[in-house]
Image (cartoon, rainbow, N blue to C red; front, side, top):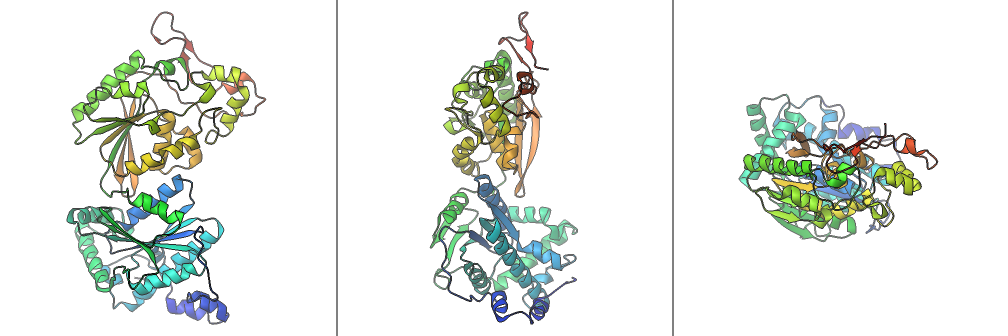
Length: 485
């Protein structure tokens, strides 16, 4: 262990500062502060190691960001690693290791300072990931953030479920930087010693001694929740997510419907039936899942005919969900891109300029889809072995959420027809596999054209429109391929 600075050294450097600066450093308020109910929120995680804090913190960040909140995780262990060249053993966490204790306290302080600075500029919800094991540490954090008028919400993760603890340990030993250079056996022993060191000092949150705090206790990964003194809309949004989240290994399968008659003709929206090739894909999809014999598999589809027809032969319970319906194209429903350019050239250009926020006249935008998908996403956090059969724009939004894509990327995620996309939990991230079933189909992916001006010519507007056919049976003698370039 090679520390680069200590609390004592930091205090020495501050000897020449003003009394007011010293008071700030010690987290003592210089004047009365009124907490703003609608101001920025700090979510502080509490709990012993291996209780699922880090996974929950990062998944909370992803959900809040996707719902258009400005959220960020500040990990105390990341700050601790800046002061220690390499982690060597659990002795770093012993209660009688005063030098290491000072480094850990400094790391907490630095995380708090950076979170405060971020919230004062661009941030909305700061998430502090760390054990915060004692009442004194929590009181210090509470006073620090209250001084700036921020709301503070503690989230204590408690777990006595042996299976869940074992799964948490496996993930920590696999993904934590502390154990990447250790053998599996040595890492497991070291981790258990670390837990014991924290148990010696750990003080659970108490509604009597910490009566002024807003907090929630999360038992066994959300099996039970206890909520104390919750205030403010942002805190309730955090509660909404945590109440749905289940920290178990999850596998999701996503697929667009089989090729539809409208896909064949290059038309957008509508409620068309599957094409001949789309029906072949439905049979192939059913064969894939029926032979895989996935335990407790269940299926969600939209209310459109083409998704129901795609799912009809899969041997699993099915539910048809309106929130999974395709983006409503309003007055452009059932038109091809060529027809849209001819009838509404200005609308076509506006959509190319900002595909995320553009709303079809009397229709929807991608942002509208994201809003109606919010309850779907929280329900997905409770699910496992689920097949979702939906539409291109909807699946772009869902995949963008799980893969943590920037909002501007959503409208251009490639979700091809006749393809299964499999997502499996990988720590707090997801591993994606693409399974292409061998059934031909049209390509519906359209890149953003370089020229998005309303004064552009038709050939420039249609340059990236994918090829399609002029009838629903493309292999017939009369079938003609329509391709712009």
